[in-house]
Image (cartoon, rainbow, N blue to C red; front, side, top):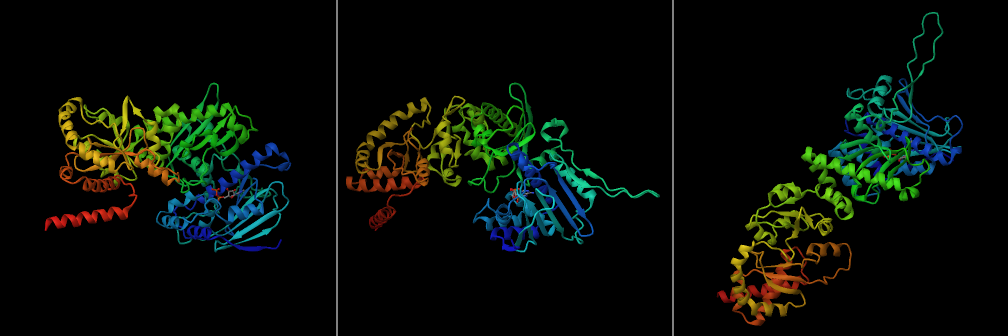
Length: 635
Ligand code: ADP
């Protein structure tokens, strides 16, 4: 094949541009990224060779090698991993297969403002362009006799050619280093001392030796010059096998970055060894930020699985329930077989037990964070709270633990609250835990449903995540207190005493408004299932409520947005506020007039709860007619 030149796709071009002109200050992390890729590639080959030993030639040593040349200002990173075929090079290095998104331009802008975000995109390889003005990659896939040379100066194009790799299976990345003469911050990446200390800092735990040819010793007088010796730069000690006291926080963070290819520090980790019937080591992390593709299909989740120190697979989903899909980390089991496949894992009893144990650890790690570092927990919550909430309806065994980890917006403060804190603040006269669901905070905080609760100084939880409807379906009570939606029937705000006091008054108004209610019921019989005197309004004339077991208006809206043909088969109840002067006035109208006003009131009730009017044109005409009638009376 002749050498070909191809263009990067638009996204890569932008990304390269960002890398080349990067303001990102830690340019040295390119080495961490390339060493991680090398180590991943060896993991893959080692794993494949378990079933296909012929892929590994006799005498093949798993290792990574650094070769620096001061004279030519080049640095080579070589690995004896699985390598890539030509198609793979084009796919992995020439396009951002995993992103494929229109949002990229927007993200691009973000990165310009905050260069530290750049690592979130799984773009490790391109970090090479932060330090090099030309990058050559020579790779040969295990089992193939032909190699591929890929080369680019980061200028929008790359060349690709098929040439066997002198060292056989594996990958060599050659960096033609930029000169940073005017930048004292940037180190000399051909200096062996610099390289040694970077490997120690970022990649000490890599499971394969990272080798470098040491300095050539000075020849002693009268003796022949001795050859330089190979040096191993990393200790290769699996971090998870060490005891926690031996590992520094920096080492934990670096290991996280190695595992996840995230460039930011995690919020918290837990490192433990399970003993007894089941033996495994585990290191689990809570990331600080959502990956940018978190809510897309491309977001891979799961833990890395090792068996007796051998890497088996990344993103093993069977080790985590979906509601903990933000958790990163690894499990190293001594009980599973090295031949486990994804299919076997799904039904393996031991895997189920490991997963149970992992869930417990994560939940107690979060509990610990919540009690010891509230502000860090709140940060965590703003990123992953909606995901964790899914555990309430999906993991009944851990519901009790999860509900104690929930945070809620509330009417009583700008700060979020736990259920426990809420219950601690409940008034003596208050029986239930009150909540309202809706689209956003602005909408729910102005809701008329809050009127009477405000008057009574009862606190209300404000639930504005789409998942909340689902969560409240299964979160029926907390510590013997019922969770009561304030938009549903069954809301009891008065104490027995107050009720008694109000009884007479209520009877009176029921008596007084009975004929009016009858007329309204008839005219709105297709819209609502009942019309009753309200107990929850003080200022607003009307509102709609759902029967206790019916979906709330917000739930109905979500269902219809999800494309469900959800016809409101369960009609709602219209509540009228007897204290509102409007109804007094209505008593003096003819039945026809009353029916007309009734339609307008129903429209108002829909608007107040954030619902869509079935016929906005008609509604606006009716309001205009009313205005005209009002002005005629005034004259
Ligand atoms: P990430 O490592 O986060 O997936 P990279 O841009 O660093 O992103 O790499 C993209 C892909 O290219 C990798 O997932 C891997 O499949 C392939 N790759 C990169 N470096 C190597 C290597 N040294 N050997 C084999 N494959 C590699």
